[in-house]
Length: 239
Image (cartoon, rainbow, N blue to C red; front, side, top):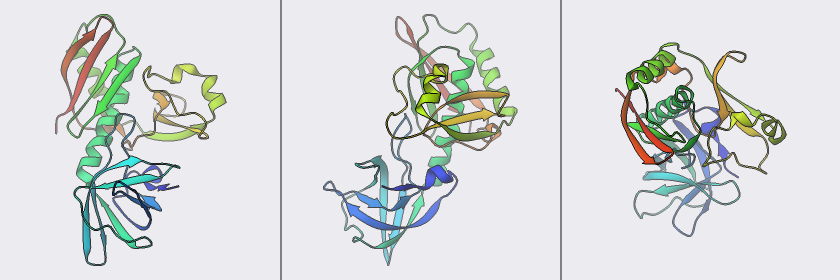
């Protein structure tokens, strides 16, 4: 099992670790990692690791077997040996943009009150698909509402509930396409706003900013019709 340092502190950019395994495909498994693995529409982190006089670029991270996280090198190179002590470094600028976009998409799911059927995140923009029959009445009004959420500088925090507690509150699950994992213990909730006056509260395993003000100005991009009951809305960071 890989200790998920990104879960303990999403702002941690560097960390020491020990190589515990290699995969048949040439991946590296560490005992603890700051690299977020691809999942929930959020890309895996990139960066590099160093040991002795060596440096190895990491293209992404993915989930492996037995709750392990696999770092995928950018190109075939000699891997650090088992037991080696390495220092891992995130491409922080890219990760931080993922955090800003991911939190912004939670706000979009509040401003557009329809079930979410899919989504994706990049370093410049994100998108959500909604189970909605008609287009938006006023995209400027939506953009203004999102930026008001940002300007409120609401706190973003997380907590945990049991599967039984989630079953008793099914409205917390907004996504039709992706359901929270079952059988792995408690389920993580991300809250935007105060404990008793929250803006959004839903299961999520991704990384987020600490306050909505950190997102910065948002801009609505394309709005596409993807089916009779499906609308795709793109959301962009202004900088």
